[in-house]
Image 1 (cartoon, rainbow, N blue to C red):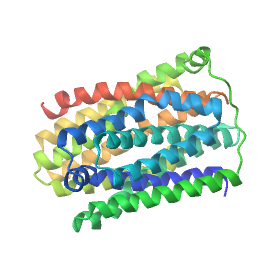
Image 2: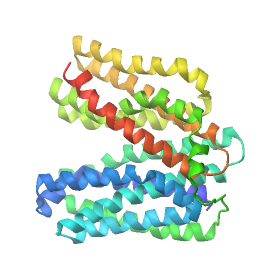
Image 3: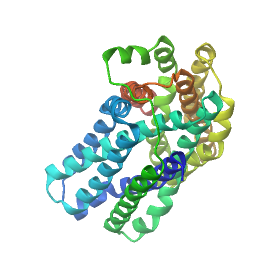
Length: 356
């Protein structure tokens, strides 16, 4: 099996395991482990922090020491995180587990995307296609995870689901060890220097992020906005999983087509980005004025398509900016910038959307 397929298979199964684990994370730690709500919230915030704050370092380490090695280290840390989650009742070790989850995910994800670029044919179409596959597999995993978690949630067996997720992750670690060993990859690795950051942070790189950070951050806010609509406004919390499923289904069905068609430069994005923001915000007020399940689901479909458009446009822009060196640094810097801008926008979202 070639390294591209190995990355995609690992991304799918680990994504299913991780998303399914998240669905019972709070219940498991509270009921089975006896941790307090504040402790669980702090532990999860450490996971998010580690996945964002170390994205730049993950890319640098991949460029310097080899992307395959960093991916394997990420797989190992994810497996250790599950083992710690299952075996410990000691809070500091729980914090270590969530730290491993965050760092492991960014080590794998950042270097996997860089390695997909370096192993694809040296043209825009093939590199964009490889990135599109990675995003589509990610959405497919998120869509499949609720189906895996549903019976465990129904029969109130969160610990069994954690064990299953752990088994999947350990299997994926062994799979990647074999796949990477059988399929060596030659990548361009350069020692990190501060001027490398200047090479990555070009004017086009920065301007693309300034143009797209609002629609990208609002897309991330999907998991706040639509639970609010279906739970608080429509009093139908059982519709929330359906909303998540529809959102990820749209991503799976249309990701490949968007990857092929969205070939925009910064100049075109200058005109398109404001339209994306308007398309995400304006329909919200119509939903409030004419609230019903029909308008809510119609807005959901619009929101899903616009978010997919923005995510694919950013991924394709990074492909355009790829110079064949410092690819891990490029993806790490992008993720770090978007982590900060997403946090900013998500703190404004409740003011604009939920309190209006």
